[in-house]
Amino acid sequence: MSAETRAEKFRRLASARGDRVLKDLELIGNLANRSNYEYTDDEVRKLFSAIEAEVRDTKAKFTTGSGRRRIKF
Figure 1 (spheres, rainbow, N blue to C red):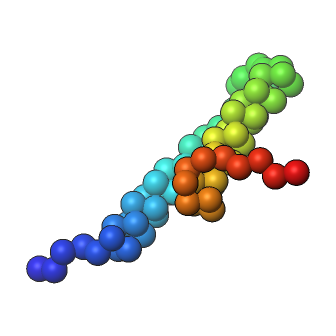
Figure 2 (cartoon, helix red, strand yellow):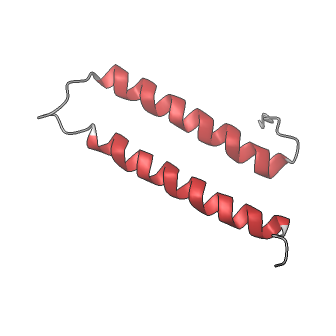
C-alpha cells in the first residue's frame, strides 16, 4: 500500500473539516427559530462578528503564507 501524499492528506482533511464547519453553520442557523429560542440583535451581532473574524484570520493563513494578518489601506 502506498503512503498518502501531503496533497491527498490535505484534500481528505479539508473535506472532512469543511463538511463539519458547514454542518455547524447549519445548526447555528437553526437558532434563528424564534419559537424555540430568544435572543437579542446584539447577541446575534456578537456571534457573527466572532465567526467572521475567525474566517478572516483562517483565510489569511492561506493567502499570506505567514499566518499573519496584513492590514491593507
